[in-house]
Image (tube, rainbow, N blue to C red; front, side, top):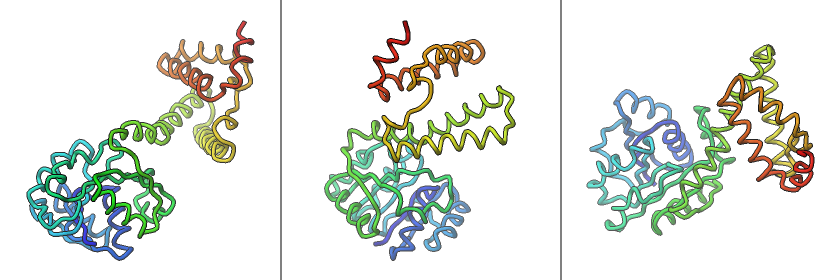
Length: 276
């Protein structure tokens, strides 16, 4: 198939690169500037730097702009869809309803979201490990699922009305982990530990925790004072954090509650007994 890419950022250009390396054609590539478009074309290995007015002479248009610009970007190209089979975007939070005019035009609309971080500029090489989640109207969903299947990629489907829950899950599993790592390293620094050693320790512990979840499941992966029922220790840590770093102390308190209520349910009676 022939694809136009509007917004060839980290996700857009990696997806385009993967397509180009698997027998598909990349036609127009549109970014916010011509220089940026040229750089994207160079990375993809094919395509023509173009303006948004040139988009549309293809089978599928993929929109890779920031989420809040998807709707306005689509409206700019909506008059050039006569020969297009489908339009899709990469947002994990917004559904393909942003492209709803496709329904009246009789063409497909879809969203396809890769559950992965694109910090690595060449992440397309690891696409076989990634789950892509899709939704759309019937034509759009059929097109994108057929495409992913032909590429040998893993995918799942969700309802378009549930995307904010879905994307929030991804934020907790990915972005918030990074935030927690930053807090961990800050606290190690307060303790006086060497920064390089602190970085290694926090990374090791995080990897170990994720590995335990993968091998044992969430319930059996939890360790530490909450799981042991050491409530006096938990309260001591919470108090010192609230006294010196109130925002971190509040976060610590909330996470303790989350662990007790959602992870170590079987331990609740034991922990409550130790509180007296």
